[in-house]
Length: 432
Image (cartoon, rainbow, N blue to C red; front, side, top):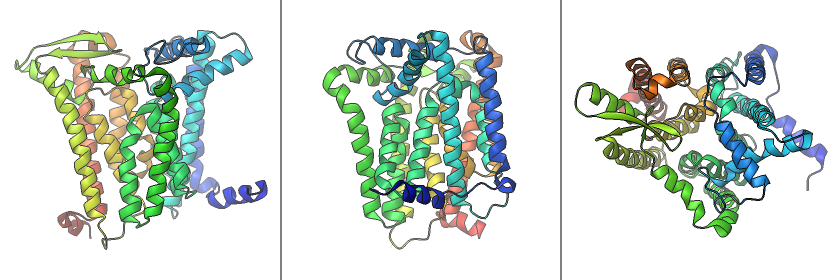
């Protein structure tokens, strides 16, 4: 085992070091997020948002009372989501009585710290990929995006999975620890599922792009070991109850904020289909003659699109191919996560948090579109939620505009990625 002094020296050698002239925007981002956290802490009882935190509190209360998840009660989340529900409850008990109010405040504090942790990890990755930046202005993309979506950062646990994804990339690309990096990604997938779409991207990058098969294999082994270890106890104790969360999500209809819901609403406006809203599975969904068809199409497009993208990555990283740019893997990861978001039959605003670790690697035009999409998401929910339930045209137009912006952003991201990949050659020639 390495002495602590050696470990500390290694950490210092890997850290880019803080430079005020270069990194003042990172410090400003910390200040803005701190102010947002204080506002939520002081005004937590008047914030206009549905409280998923209440649901987390109920889960934590049952577990601390001796109930076993998936066995004694149904849980709509994967197993490794549980620590992020339980930690605030345990700390609440240690400092006083376990109450909903104290739990909400501690949960928000946890989300705040995870956001700052994600900011630190992304800042390190940014300095690694773009070491020549005189002013680290790209970190502003993260700070401003986090501010725009802070309501959902503090009131949902999605930032926990986002932190684990950023930590996985940090371990893989800064520390060069494939086993640990893969393990963190496996835990992220065991908390929120979506990080699993990043594993093929990373394996292709290391195996084909870098020609380091051992690194790729160790990443994959770490992923499956961590995911298996965190899930196996519940499989053994609660099977088949653990499958209920998968059944829960498979039975969900077309959620009213999804791209497919916007298609249904436009169709109903043109008189091509009927539409009504219903509240089930914890969200507002569309009831329409097009609903089941589009829900099935969503699954096919999600899986088929990801497989096609992985095939494209495998092709352009073929042996003897061109040298990949340092930000290539982050751009590819953006596309995989983004496709999973926009092709999903459920598109809650907090899903946009998943893109935060990658926004700093985007072009300015992409970031501006993302800012606008976040702002519209914040307007529609929760400020126009009653109008959304009633299918009033104003909130539905806001949601439609947000979804159009997301599609535009996805196209811009694809276009940028094809250019830096140099395939097809027609786009490579335009940039040379």
